[in-house]
Length: 192
Image 1 (cartoon, rainbow, N blue to C red):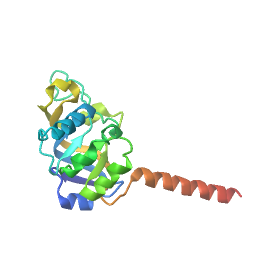
Image 2 (cartoon, one colour):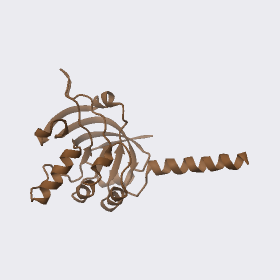
Image 3 (cartoon, one colour):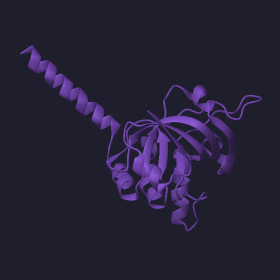
Image 4 (tube, rainbow, N blue to C red):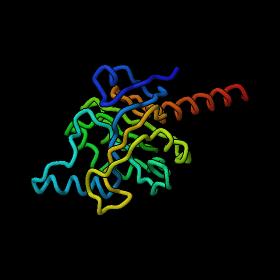
């Protein structure tokens, strides 16, 4: 079964989401990759506030390609989330409630998600052109000098993701490894 969620994320949404859930997201997300994360944290240390209000928001780890004529955005597939792990706990502390990307998250990020009640969604890598169809508008809101890594405000509709890490500590990757090991052990037992 697929869930539908309208952003910004509300507490009821977060409570209902479990690792492995398939979700269609609609509303506003912000884009930010490595360079934007680094700048946000460095500027905050200098007393400059974050360029966007993170409260209940979702950040999509993407650096979209330029839009072709008549299109809102170019290819917009997820980037590897681990590159943002150094900065993510602080953003979660500031109110961020969701992230979209691909790949594993560090233990520090997973602990921060539990502490601050947030989730990590996975988008399908390799489906950038398909994913971009769910993006209805795109506007640069900060760090234009970073080019594709500028922070953008995207309006999305039925954007397909799945929950990798939930706010309870559930981790679809760890569950998958555990199931595989259990299956492998069962095969070994049968073969004996």
